[in-house]
Length: 230
Image (cartoon, rainbow, N blue to C red):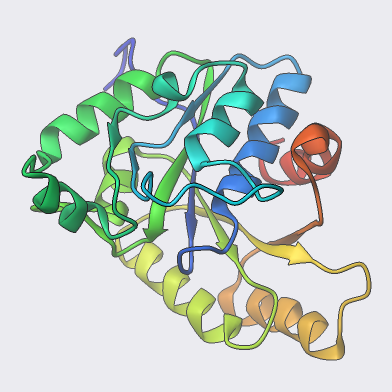
């Protein structure tokens, strides 16, 4: 709505599946935008899996990683958290606290509007249910943000990525780019072909993100954010 102080600008990051590195890409975007002088809100609307903390040396929980990149607290990143590593709708059911679609949208919008630009990270893929009547795709549509799709570079990624693009565009979402992650220093013939094929058949810009770490998110993310969010 014109003039709405909670109007959201930025990017919505989704994936072709769970575990493809959405949080790493999101954190790189947050860190690089902050390094560029932007006031950034990092938002993970719903988080599951608190019962299965990462092992030493692995990436931290999603909301902790995003909080570190944004210079804020994990509580500021995520409003709805659950223990089991399952889909949000099931996690909420198991907890006896079903999520309300309108509440999730409102809370996400409010948190995203605390920055001049927001990086909102979804849960799993676009069609994952969050609450009755609300999927990840529905949330992205409600926020009106351009979409970044994170995908694996290896075998199977062409089908998963093109299906995700088809689903996004069917809902009227503006797909800004696909990011293949992690992109190896020496990609194979198949990985290079996957990138070219997704770009050609999906009619989308395909970027890559190489191996990175929590202490060098901005340097790794800067070329990425310049290409996706100039």
